[in-house]
Image (cartoon, rainbow, N blue to C red):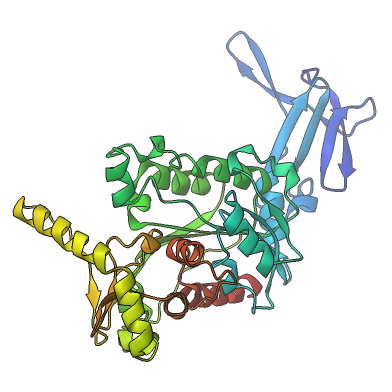
Length: 398
């Protein structure tokens, strides 16, 4: 490499780091020690004065070529220092943006600014852009997006699609033991690539509880830790710990570069009953809604009875109004399959869009019921994430 024993060295400071090169009048020299068959050159840079310009960085990297050694902060060290000196508003990029139920938890918080979103489904992308008119929308499969196409961001958030990792998705697509091979099972990979290249200060991801123990979830956690993130994971229990009527348990990951974060749940069980989220009884409307799906309900009852006789557990849920726990609302709710249904004097009816919005604490602009049900069914419980982002904001500015 051109650094033989005794070679005089010149040290040239740079804005971030320094360069070491052979120099005839250099005050420092290459040292060495005896080894079998000769001598091993040694250049010791573990010197307090030499490294004084880099003391604000947690890590350095050394790049050596012929007669030249570059000492600079590592990319990770740059990112950690940057995250420690961030000032609000923190720029947010959302991947798998859906209809914006996650970013809705940020819109009234002055600590955050939504700058971009990535979403493949046109109807969901329309809804997201409607709510974030000044942000960049990339309507694409995230696998095809170049990281250079994304604006600068400090926070990366997203609900990684769970269709391959949920219990229903694994069974439906025959993915037991191998959800990563499903259509959406590998979507954590482009997310990891984006994180590795851009190293944002904060990451927030959510998924079904089973994702955390899957290969994808374990790889996500392990890789983030290896590239320098402090990783916190938990299972959100909305009905028991967050006072929510809908018991939609979710796996949550929060990763920070600068300092470790731990979420504090309010530990409040739901005290409201289902009726507080429902429209007031209306004979004409309730009857019309019940009659519209009456034939489907009868078919479901016959279907369930047949499976019960075979020892299977197919059922649908019915709410009478006094319950303080509501089963998870699926993305396919509009297809009238497992419910939950509302009991009326005229038969069972579906929850209406306004009722779904009250349950999820988020109003969508589309009045197309199927689209609204899909957005809300695959989205997050906005009120919970409002509190999560409040805690994260306080953590970032402290």
